[in-house]
Length: 295
Image (cartoon, rainbow, N blue to C red; front, side, top):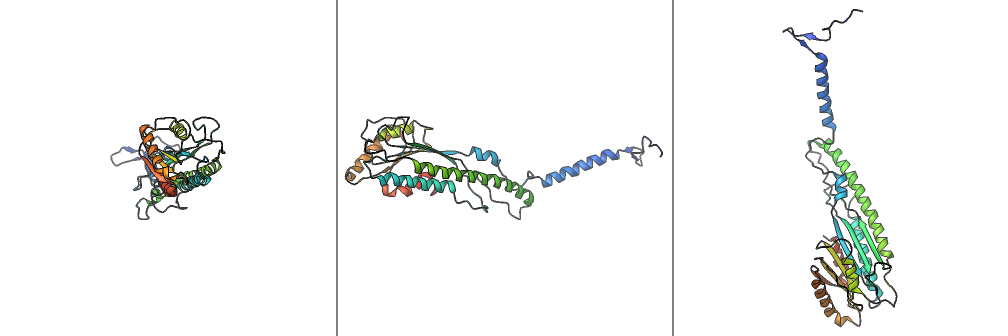
């Protein structure tokens, strides 16, 4: 077999200079490979711009809620039970959402939720042995609408959207599971502490004001007849808005307006934000709106 000469791997041009065929072939192959990868990659420049859903699912903003629920015997047991049922219903609707199995349109983000609930007892401000619940529900990121068939980059965009939809579906499942757990937590909280309990309502509100984040973005709910018969405990409400669902119990209903007005004045003096008074028979739609499920 004849030996190869030093120039046998190249072809001379009409000018007599050599063309390095191997080098040209490698460069061309690399260019073809790069074009193929770019055409098939989900990160190809597309008309649908998607955020990093793994990161977004973790960094969704959180809404904060605090509830003081009065189940003492100055009100009928049905009052606290009804408020608890309204809270469960609203949280369930918030966590379960109205998402379909496969979204066909843009889905807005749903913020996470943290909720503290404490019931009224004689020693509401004590930090041990008091019936209380802490609830957390993770947020769900936004999901853009799937790409249209007329999208010039439909194949790449569809792959990108499918990955985003899978991450979004995991976030939805996590929110629904947390919502079911939250509902069970609320149903299990003890409301009636027995006839030997007094109503330290101000202490309940002060304990909540001192718990968790503070400020005008923290929503507070007081559900009570407003009959405080323990020494009041003051707190700084730091601009938090308060919704007061007042129970005008039979036998003390005529004093209900003046008690509600006194609570509004007292809360505002301690730095709360706007105080909204709602009658107990309108509690359900008010609580839905408080959580934002009716928006």
